[in-house]
Length: 288
Image (tube, rainbow, N blue to C red; front, side, top):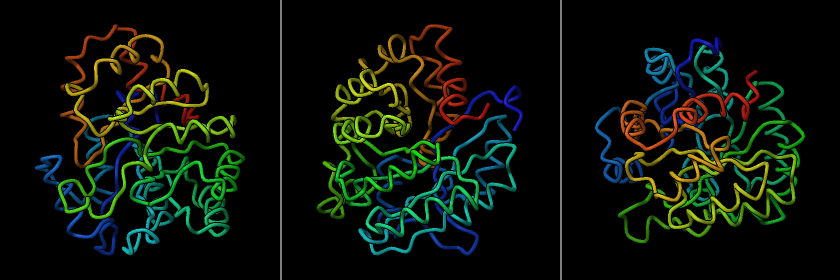
């Protein structure tokens, strides 16, 4: 990967379909999230499709799925296959793995294999979809392993479009994605890099507080068009958190084109924009 030629690094993109035609979510959840985000483009891109999309824009992208069979009953896409496919597009793709926290010791062993044998550069968790409290000490051996492996853990926080508008939200509980639960994790594992995904509405102030207080906590800006960012998030990104926020789109539900067009309209200092778009990600992902 030639970092000098990249215009940006998107730290948050979803692989929604594997090479066998299997999907990451059941059809009801796919349809609900498409309606919530008003996504008009391909909702279920493969690894190859994502690579082509970002290569055409001189950007790199972090790719992952969410492994949640214990909570959803839906078979997960293979993080191993995603990582191996991403390796064929190493000029633009950075693979993250995902393991189901409910798997216990098996999740720890799998995390180690994903890094050691498949080259993943981090891990993605979605506490609401995976139905777990991140600060439950039963999951601490998994965080200990990830910290030892020297890769970041990216956690969904705040509102989610998955299940939005469905009766009971399809059983998905928002409280699992309160960023204050991750304050415990960051405090107890100071060597673990924690990325809070998305503007954490309705807990935006909490997320800013955690990222300000904990040196090992960062925020990605995915999942929302920048024109809808809470004003306190824009102020923090422009000042005290300028080296701790990361560009993320949440592709495919939000395209990098749409996100970047709205980002260009934010009132940010010129010196801050390249930090958010690329430089912070290079440091956090240890790409250089």
